[in-house]
Amino acid sequence: MADKPVVVYGASGYTGRLVCEYLRELNVPFIAAGRDKARIQEVLDKVPGIETVDHEVVEVEHAVGPLTELFRGAKVVSNMVGPFIKHGPEVVQAALDAGCHYLDTTGEQDWLLDAQVRWGDGYAERGLLLSPGVAQMYTTGEIAANLCLETPGLDTLDILVLWKGFPTYASTQTIFTILTADWHYLEENEYRRWDPHTTFEVNVPGQHQTALALPWGGTSHPVWFKNDPRVATCKVAGGVFDRTVMAGVVETVKMVEEKIKPLPPEQRQAALAEVAASVQAGMPPRENPRINTSLDSVHASGPLGRAHCVIYGNSNYKQTGLLQAYAAYSLLQQAPKRAGLASACQAFGHRELLGALRSFGLVLEPELTVRH
Image (cartoon, rainbow, N blue to C red):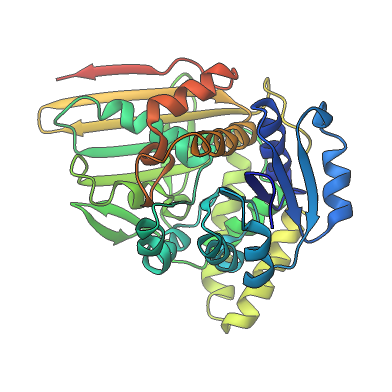
């Protein structure tokens, strides 16, 4: 049973460590949990000032029963163990059974849709928040979209998310899991399936060069804006600035479609994991804000209006760590703005989240232009 208000599950990973770092900065006591206590302790020992926050390291089996027992007594579970379509169900069920709010960093659209159907009502009935996808690649762009939507009469979102860096091991595993799922965009409030071979040549605000982008699994945004009365259509392009890396991703998508998708499910997962491990087998270096930059650009349009919002930032994994920690910090003090399945902006407010990112120096003041 937890005697701390927040449990970070998967704390030994790259992003889990950052969540713990920002919980320390917000002075929030937490339990760092996972399947290997020694590994978690080794990671936390390298966090500067970790001794200044009340925390505990706990080893736990990845099963509903043990996780429920660990979570009971806490208020928030921050789950860092992906791919979430594979490892998430036990954690979501355990958090619900223990009466905890649930957060994760997923980019898996199929996981969002599955979680909505399986647990959305259960969380809502108990006044609990179920918020997958609290992360830079989804939340910062969602903030930009909501800034555009403050202008009435705009119903179409064209979202671009780019960052400079390389995915962590866990992110790479998740990316390869996404490749086997169907990807959707939103058109007239209906889900439409992307052709998996779709690519975009995108104009990048602030530079002369274009970039290569993909639907990136559809992302979380079409799910969050489904049934939002302000939005009828939402399409998203995403990727990294490095064109060579993106060209490799395009070839990987083709390989998955031709060689891995036809395999039986049990062979498919093993083949994907092997390829993913060959791409990124270790932990990348800590982010350098001069190098690891991010860009979120949203064009919003309607019959008689347009808005464009750009948010320049750095250290996208740090942004994710802070968003997770701030979400937990907020939930300890007040109820979310919406219970059940909800995005970070729906649960906490887009301007509040922007304020948190700005206060830690992770994003510039958004550039917003409006014509109507």
